[in-house]
Length: 241
Image (cartoon, rainbow, N blue to C red; front, top):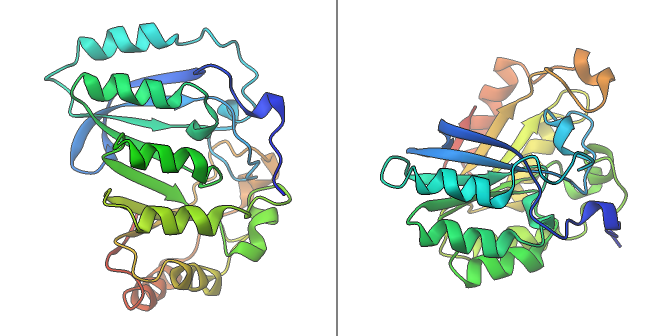
């Protein structure tokens, strides 16, 4: 069973960074991006290591400061993307999403799928207009890719919940050659067969959580092209970023 340490589950909304404008984080929309702190996974290739352990002070970006900024952007921004870290560990996530929606913004939620209980509430209350879930690997490889035993426990449940919801969504996998092979990606395609959208993300070794991954790389262009061909029979839409 995947257990959550006290340090991994925030009792307040801890915001590590606010990106005031983005053209790429919400499909087809201009959005602000809220980065929450703390994650229950330890993916060695993670490109946001400063957000993983949640050890920085909780007053970096107070909620009220973020809300004040968003109030000034009503009518100027379309949406707010909430990412991390893992946002579903934040105790104030649901109230925060309600407040953002009350301002009239569309809301996108990024998640690793480890908290289907939180996802269920988000979906039931209609708090997300777009969901993006990272699928790290086939389930058998989750302890390696997510850096934690039991990390894959709730993944299938979250996949089914998202695919069964009316909310637009995408699944995505980061292509790290040291951890995954093309056959693994096709196996994931089978896990999400019939999904609306699956995005393959090229791994770029900028500042990985595990410094040894600074010399890892992504799949070759030929491998990616072959995957797109193989996946088109499994998912409705597949892209690369």
